[in-house]
Length: 170
Image (cartoon, rainbow, N blue to C red; front, side, top):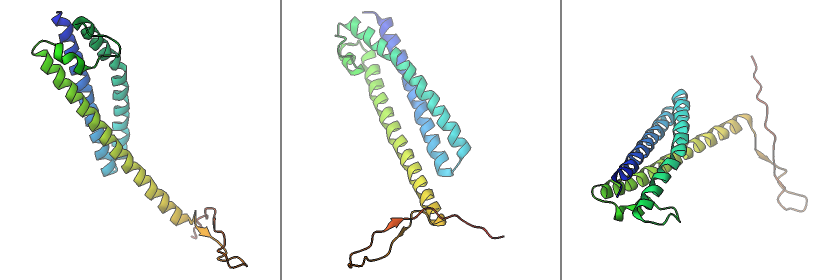
């Protein structure tokens, strides 16, 4: 067994985990900026998050290749693509625990990122909805107006009005 190949897999996995942990930190920073209405900080953390996500995407191939090389060395089939958990039972000690722990930690980090990102998205959508409703109230846009009842006694059809223009007298 080529231990250097397994060590290389562990190093690549550790590097991947560090990137994901940094992404968790950026998402948390983004949440903090949203709550504090820090737009400059929000734009910066969003930009950093986007760059890191691209870096992770670019380095996934390296991790997949290391998993495939290790699987091939262990005599596992390469189709379908082996997962880290497929390697664990065949890896020697202490690498089996290290890869298993890394696999679990990676899954937790991914789930944490998805959950926090979804919460941030919901927060932004709710804030935008409130702003939109406030602007509509101020401008009188999207108000339903109608005649009340038709001549035959049925309810009249209500129509949305066009946005009113705000006028300001000085």
